[in-house]
Each structure stands twice: as C-alpha cells, then as structure tokens.
Amino acid sequence: MKKPIFAVCALAVAVSCTLAGCGGNNNQQQEPVKTTSFEELRSYYDELAKGEIKQEIATTEARNTYYTFVGDENLLPPGVYAKLEDVVYKTYSRLYGKYGAEYTTPKITIYIDAAYSGKGANYTSGKKIYINPNWFVDNPDDYDSIIPALMATIQIYNASAPDWIKSSIRAYVRDQYRSQYADKNWFVSTSYEGVSYEEGGVHGAAFLKWINSTTDMDIVYRLNRALQNGSYKEEFWKDETGLTLGQLWTSFQKNS
Image (cartoon, rainbow, N blue to C red; front, side, top):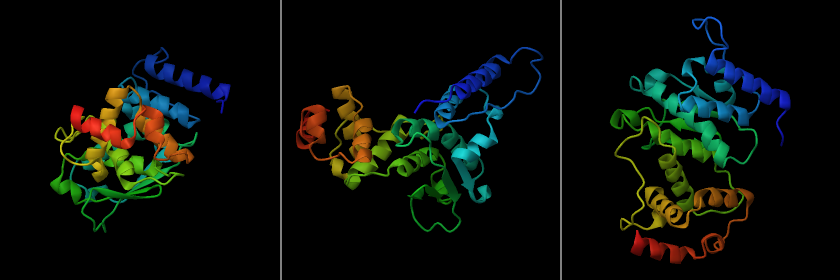
C-alpha cells in the first residue's frame, strides 16, 4: 500500500524541524512529531532509539495510539515502570515493523496486574499483556522480559506450529532487540549446551541463531512469515536451508 504523499512530506518536515530546530530561538519548545501511519511511526521510533530525537518531545498521541499501560505503576518497585515503558516505547514499533502481518499495527494493552498469581514475569492473551509486579522484586533487572511478550502479541499464526518454535522465536527476538537495560546475565549463545531445541526458549533460540550464522539467512523472519501465511510444513527447513530439521540439529550439535 502506498503512503499518501502529503503524509510523507508532513513527516519529513516535522522530523527535519525537530532535528534542526527550524531556525529561530533554540530555547523555544519543540513541537511534537506528528505521524499518520505505522510505517512513519516506526521511522520516528528508529530516530528516537538512536538518540537523534529527544524523548521528551515524543507525543502522547502516538503512545496511546499503539500501546497503553493500565494499572497502578506503584505496584512495581521504584523505577521499574519507567524502564519497562521505555523498552516498549523503543522496541514495539521496530519489532512489529519486521515481524507483524498487517500494514497498520494493532494497539496493545499492558496491564500491571495486582491479582497476578503466576510465577513468570508476564503472560499474554491476544493483544493484552499482563505484568506480574512481584516478578521484579526478585528479578529487578529483567526489563527485557517484556520483549517476548510483545512478540507473543504478534504471533497469530495461520499454520500449526510446535510450541518450541513459538517460544524459541520469542527468546530469539529478545536477544535480537535487547535494550539498554538488558540483564547482562541473559543471552542467547550459538553453541550447543546439551539441551534439545524442543525445550524451546533460549535453547531453541540458540539453534535458530546458529542457523542464521551458518547460512547467512534470516531464518526467523522466514519462519515467522511461513507461519503467518499458513505455508509452514516440516519441509520448510529443507526448502530454505537444503537440510532437514534433523540434519540441521545434528550439524549444530557437532559444529557449534
């Protein structure tokens, strides 16, 4: 779908004015950047993530259009809410821009759930993410735990997928989009550590990351697209890499 020319021009003018100040008194308050499509918003967030646009000029309008937080932020330990929102703010549009199925992003709602009874950091239902406030008491640096949840809102597939694939993709994108607040002790390696990919999570993600490193292809992007368009079958691995899933796994065990 082509973007309206006037919208692109308007964004270009807005961004250039923001970065350059549009002349005049540099002490004047900068106007918020206005966006009219998700693709434009993604470009804006990219500039924001690079530090080329000051975060304080980001619009409340854009934030409320693409995601919103609900609940009492004081349920979280001090400072956690601001960092969690910053991760979402700088990650969601870029993540959806690559892996999302629609041109226009769906809005997601993130609940700080006072009644959370699970043990994990969060859980996802459709376009809703529920955060466990207690998680951050014992895991104060686990801000990037929100990234797999963001990916889970995107993983609406039209093909049957084993659970290991879905959880491995989520762990992979957490590693790929790790934030400035990332826990230094959490990472995905490219080495076999004695656990099957069928366990999913970081183990399956390590397998996928290794395939990328040895085939020079974005296997996760292709895998995600095949699941979205309903074309995924066991033959996917052979078609894309020249090796069956079993052959890839054997090679990973021997050569990683």
